[in-house]
Length: 221
Image (cartoon, rainbow, N blue to C red):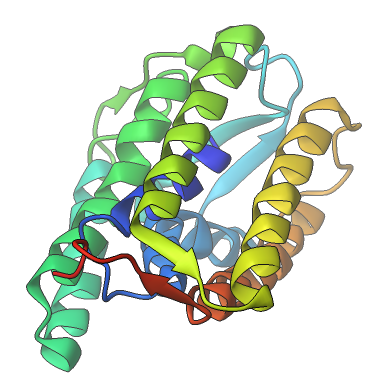
């Protein structure tokens, strides 16, 4: 799951219009933001394996600290609490908490049974990644709904708000499609650093274009 997580962030703007997309994107991607650092520090393990599922190029051997359900709830609660203490904005607090936990739920739908319920505990996963067509259809539908909800909630106030957003959507689609049809990476460290670099670009980008959009009348909460 990749653009599906961004779809949740885009849709969340409907329920928390005062929360910037940079933060909403950080929330829905939070587990994947932690994961490459845990990989680099040797706390979690992934193996490049194009046969583990039909869709993914990786076998997720161990990632209890970034991707177990219990830790997702803990990370969500910490992130949401920090946000609430700073902003006192309840809808944004709820959207951030749900956004972090939604990452585990969407991964549970797509992954095989490799997602731990808690560190050292049983693992779960429905295995949508065993269907290439099913995975692409579900993700693209989610992304379309997320875009529709975001556009229905905000409008561009200048060219950055319009073309910055369109460019963001285009890049996400390009990354998603190219990742599916490109050759697998040769080193795990390259995977970790590519994730770090991608989020270092995408999150500020989301923050930037969202600051150049305004909430449509009737969507202020």
